[in-house]
Length: 232
Image 1 (cartoon, rainbow, N blue to C red):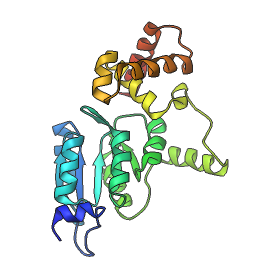
Image 2: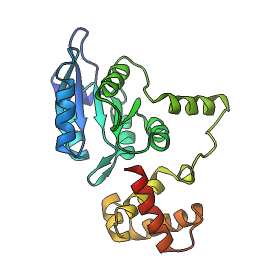
Image 3: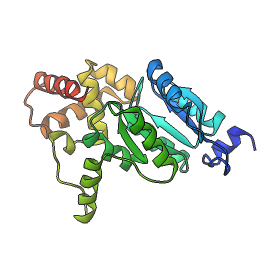
């Protein structure tokens, strides 16, 4: 079966005894190169492709049939959480490990709910990233102990954990809009990037002000910038 056909049949795993195929999706060439070098000495893993954005990732999935996608949440013209949801719907057997700079306590539960199998921050050591890749390929979820404890509490409690920060009350889309506001984008620019109408983006902005208890657009912009700086 050709690679493209394998991918279209939901990303079948590699045959027993062959290296697992890893696709790296990150918009920073230096990060991609670092991950390639990091995995070069892993005998049971081979990097089958790289992509800088979502369209390139879709092409790579179809052409290379990866077993695991290592994904950054911040991609040009795309939101990583939405990419995870789309990949999960189209390729349910393709494993996803998020490697991101974003705050794990806020984004890891969202990434797992969207369909990822693991989350590791870019600030972690190379050994931790390799450990996460091995764990996900072995069929285990991977998050830090702190996040694992929080998720366990939510399961034992029979529902979602109590919000730890004001950002926890936001939907994925609202968080996405807030992040883009923090990058300095206007309503029209956000609408184009998210393929939404300006009216829909404006509605999101109003809901953000309501949920975050902000009185003005200026306060929303300041909050978005400060949240983004804390996340870096």
